[in-house]
Length: 270
Image 1 (tube, rainbow, N blue to C red):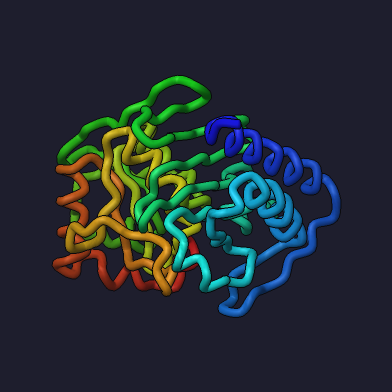
Image 2 (cartoon, helix red, strand yellow):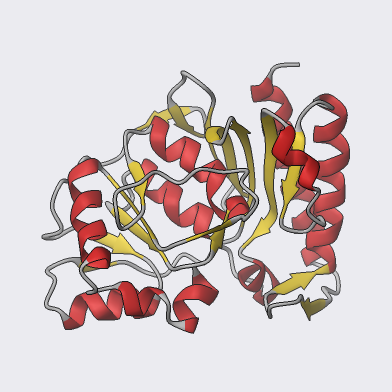
């Protein structure tokens, strides 16, 4: 079975399970650190772990809902999984949650599938291939300046941009971070922001897709995030075509957005 068939099939199966369970009673509780989890997150994680690890037993495993196994650090290839990205949205009955499955090779996100079950939209990218949305090639907008750029992100970061008089177009909040980022890949928006403390599983699948679509994910210093490190946490990030990404990164670097990026609401909403 090809990686395309394997991952895409698992993402769809996971999404179907989550949709089915959403019609039943969903139990929600808080994990250590305060982030929410549901019984559906756990069930979807178990499904994905069983199928993906059976198909590629030599790959390491990193998932938001599985206790971290440090043996992943010695693996060249690692599955990086968020069973339900946007758990709060899922639990509320909203539509902007996804299943995110990525493959990391030597610290680099090389393949990704982000599936939005409610909208029945699949974003995907494999090494050397284009970024696809429901099988059709997509590209980032290529906008290289912040003026009139359509930008989505945590409220405190967008508030700070507006307070500074930045001439951008504020887009509605997309709660799944992976979903927010792939909207850059298909030109629905020009740029996206992530507050501090996003994790590998929030980013890796979307990173592969965004890169294949011609955009970048960078830190305030312009560095590209790497994955499968001892710490899975990342600093504030921007996602856009190169010129716009550099301008937004500069706003974080010079302090215009740095305080907002660390705001609890920005962190909670990534």
